[in-house]
View 1 (cartoon, each protein chain N blue to C red):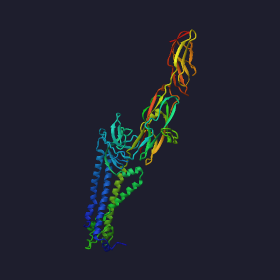
View 2 (cartoon, rainbow over the protein chains, first blue to last red):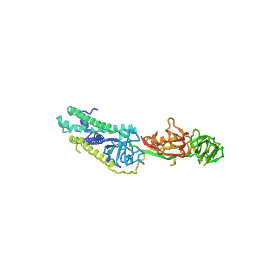
View 3 (cartoon, each protein chain N blue to C red):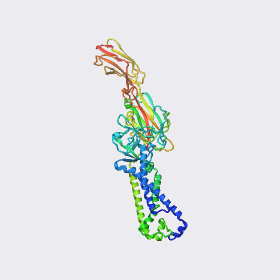
View 4 (cartoon, one colour):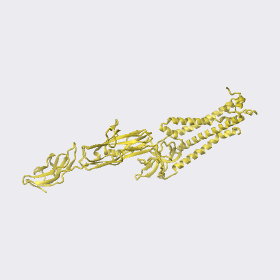
Length: 371
Length: 199
């Protein structure tokens, strides 16, 4: 049923008290919606505007700094001179562990090498990799709660929640205009020289009544104006939030949670190969040289190298336990005899020398002595 | 209750804006004060659950303590690492306290494989994942290249959530056959650390 021209029925169905209560409800709801939207826009501006000064807004996406910083907070960090970077401050810095990410953790202590140890308040241990001073972007300065929550949701892939938040915001924007008709009524009454309300109190009641014949012509332009203004306000709000939405999460990054488990030091130790024992030298008399004898070490060997004064003079096999040295083998007058056992491992170059190195001296071409 | 005058409606239209500006300023300054005013460390005891957490099954004993190694000596050991965190994370392996410059370390090959099955008590049942091992090279290289999370090895991405995830790492060391004789009696040691950072 068209409500036009049935004002009498209207009044009859809705007595003034009810209509007034309805109007006040619209004012309250509209005012509350505008307050919420303005607060959100204000917070968003706090989060984004400092970027103009070169301060850096970032969105906290993990709880590793809880309870002081929680996911969804936007933290604005301010570049500060180096002396102001002191332990206890919350630093924003390039994360050495995750290239391209930012770390927002509390500066705990400086190390001797000049690097900075950081720790998440909620992390059980300090970050394993300290920061270089040059990696520090700034010191946390402003904390804007809640505005980054959609960014944190997006980071977690909760797009449904993001869409829900957008829908709620759209709903609030719509509610902002719910009492627009009440304001228009006054302006139209003045501006369009509309006849004063009849004594019966024909109420201009929102859009519905604006279609009534009494105010029809005047209200068309007024409504258009109002719609334009409301559309403008809507556009401004959306634009501000859009810009903020682009700036605030620009470098939205994790403050990383970390945990580790360590296996105590593992150790590998090489064996020490034993050499031949009881290396002795016995002179065999004129013309018969000397006999070098030894005892096989307790080790798998493939043979021995016997050298005299550093020159190899014999390569007995693993079963041998002695070798005879005679003069004239080499142009040596005096030198130490070394008996070296060779490791039997395939390809191994390990060796071990005997426990004694007797000196053999050529007295004449036929006579050698041990000492 | 009187009717809503257009004047009242217009006042109501804009009163919210200054109120909101004040409100947002108060909120930001209060929040900033509580978060940043403290210039000394504030230890917090109520560290939130819901995070990343990592355990292993070694009961705090070394993965291996091998002695009397000779050229071609070899051995292997397994360790099961379990992620119980609620957040998705990437787990990496690196060495800590590495003493890996001796001639033994420069001639000992280390192979680290990730897979499933087996535990710290026995590698029986271990099956390595397809593809490249986590590390293959000299123990000295491990000690010098994998020193922190940033240059850590492997890319085990845990999904977080309610169920824990376990991965078994198998370490195999082999003393090279051409290890010089001067390596006799030398030693090398390194701690193995797995660190999870949420991604």
